[in-house]
Image (tube, rainbow, N blue to C red; front, top):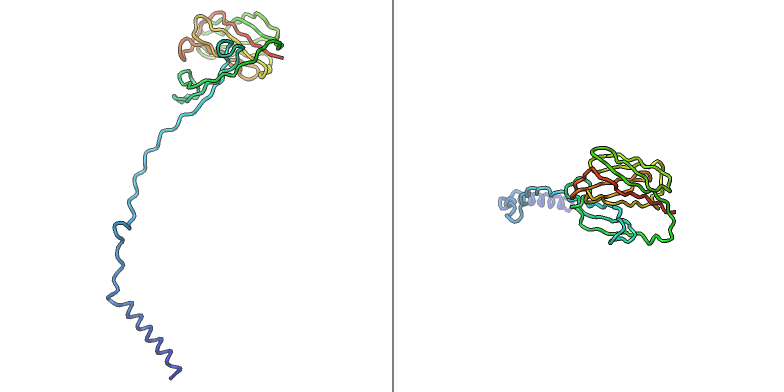
Length: 207
């Protein structure tokens, strides 16, 4: 009897659990309430517009009010029209890096007068040439001219100076590497123009 009791007890427990599992009183799982259900995903928002690129350009500053001995002007602004160039109307601020007093500094120079007509290349009249070099000028496009030196210069010790012809409203110049220089002549805001006479150009290399 003692050996069969645990077996009977196990059978009774199993039957009892089976009845509970099949009992009609065990209701079905309820559905999630209103607050428990996941909401419907919202629609994707439209893509925002691309931001504008910030540009910096360096321009030779002629001797004057901003820099007594000349120097450089750093223009900063946003590329509003997306053409990759910082135009005059896009400049938001400018800073000046001025040259120190050149008194006592030894230098050699190339000084010339440039004239240009129609679509021809600029013509050079040399005034002084202690640098003993030559510059060949070509017209790249209207109002924009590239001068190529016949030898390299030390760009870290070289500055350029130029005048604005009475026929134009402004000139911008820059050294392009160690053997080229570019001049841009404007007759109005961002209006490049040809035809000028006796633009004074100087390239000065300090020792």
